[in-house]
Length: 217
Image 1 (cartoon, rainbow, N blue to C red):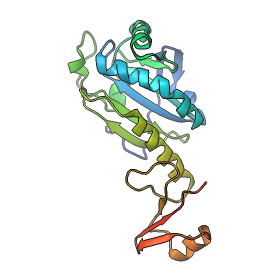
Image 2: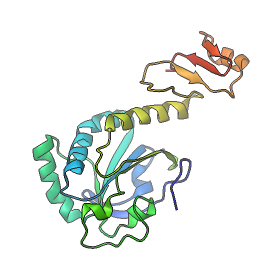
Image 3: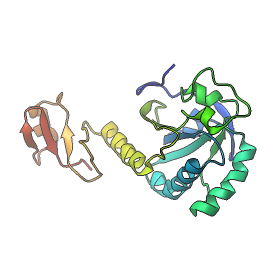
Image 4: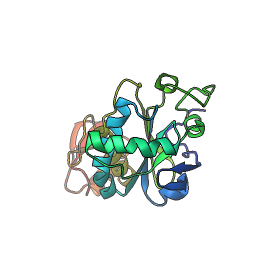
């Protein structure tokens, strides 16, 4: 079954490079980014995992944990991380899930439900390049899925997280290409009267349905 925005993120217990975890318990009161990869010792995945390691301090600032998944055993992961550090300049500083039996990949609808575990090529796992943004309430806030041949833009994942966190705290929406600090949109279900009370500093009305205001602190 597809995982939709607003669904509770399926819980699971797995082995990782940092020991066994239960996903919901591991998240705790944090936000979380779960991102998956087709296979160990593959080129695109190597660049992605290294880049995320470099970005981890930014996620830490946002009270967000990151966790990777690859459809191979943890023993392979522990050898692969050496290559990642050597080629990308960043050591893996977050847990990497071992999913050799494809349990989590199937649970999150990342791969065809008839896929069979065992000796595999990356092509066999080609749909497994997904991102799930999960809130402290364990609900899925956003999802992204890329083809095997396209490396993800994790700067965009960070921007997406900023928007999700902002809009979960304030009754606002973010416009196209929004970046933190830029004006945001007042939702259509907020009346002008309520908007004047909420934003006494004023807001700009472009159209009756399009009103912008400085980003709330």
